[in-house]
Length: 376
Ligand code: OSB
Ligand code: MG
Image 1 (cartoon, rainbow, N blue to C red):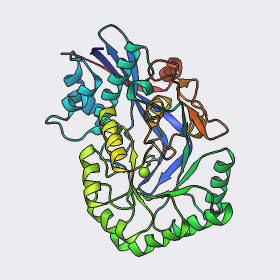
Image 2: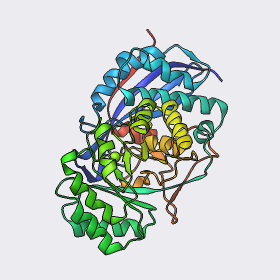
Image 3: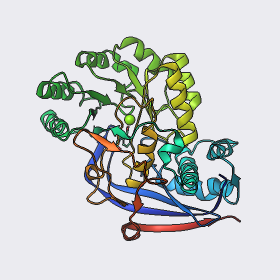
Image 4: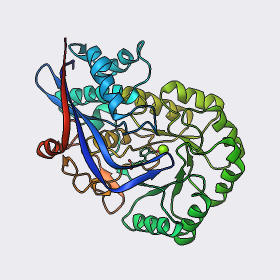
C-alpha cells in the first residue's frame, strides 16, 4: 500500500523518571521526550518517538539536534513523497545525508506504522514478527554501593525479570558484580554494560569479569570503536556485545570481519530505523550472531516500536523493554506497558499499528513546545 506523508508535528514532552538513571557517561532524571505525529494524505496519523537524549553522552545526537535535523533535512525529503513500501524511506534518507540516525529513524518508523495502519495489521506483523510475547530484561543504573545494587537486582528477580543488566564503570564494577553473584547465586542471567567507559589499558581488569559467568559485556570501549573491541574480545572468554558502535548494517559487517563482538544490541533509533534494524537482524541470523532489543528510556510510544521489533525470531536474549511502571508515574499510552508474572510483555498483535492508544490529554499536559512541518 502506498504511503504519502503530508505533515509532521513535533512535540517535546518533559517526563520525570521515577528514579534517576545513571550510566558511566551521565545521569538522566528528567527525560525530554521527542514525539512525532506523522499524518498521511488521507488524514491517518502515526505517533512515533525520537529516542535521542538530552546531552550527547551516548551518541552525538540530542533532542535539540534531532529537532533541527527533522525540521531542516529529514521532513523536507519525505513530505509530499509517495512510498510504495516503507523500505524505501531509509535509502532516501541516507543519500548524501550523514549521521542523524535517531532523527531519521523517528520519521522512517512512523512510515512503517502508517503502512501497518492503512493495512489494518500490527506493526509486529508488518515487520515479520513471529512471537506474541517478549521476554523482558531490566537495565539497572550505577548505584552508590554494592549492597544497594544487590538489593535492586533481588527485587528485579522477584518481579520476574528474565535477565539483569547492570551498568558498570571504573571503580564500580568487579565488587558490584561480585556482590550481586554473592547475594543471588550463579543462576541469575546477568550481564554488564560499560557504556564506553574503559580503554584497552583496562583489558586485564575486564578479564576478571570472566569469573562471573556473565551472558555478555556490553560496549566496554569507545562509542565508535571496533578494532580495540576485537583486541579485547581476543583477551576475554565472555562475549562482547556492541551497542554504541553499531550504527548501520556496514558496522555489523565490520564487526564480523574484525571479530569485535559476538552479540549485537539493536536499537532501531541508533541504526536509522526499521529497514536498517531488519537488515541487521537478518544478517546476524545468517551469521549465527544473537541479537536483542536495547532501550533508550522510551515513553510508551517508543516502547511500542521496540516490542514490535523484538517479536522477530533472532531476538534471542530478553530485551531492555521494561514495563511503564519501571520508568514513569504515569505513561503516555493506554494501556500502559505491563509485564506478566513470567517476565514477558505481550505483543499487541490484535491491534493495528503500534497497538496502544496515545493518551493525548496526558501528552498535551506534558508538552513544552511543538512545531508543525509541512511540504513547501
Ligand atoms: O546503553 O543501553 C544503554 C539508556 C540510555 C542510554 C543508553 C542505554 C540505556 C539503557 C536503558 O540501558 C535501557 C532501558 O530503556 O531500560
Ligand atoms: Mg548499552
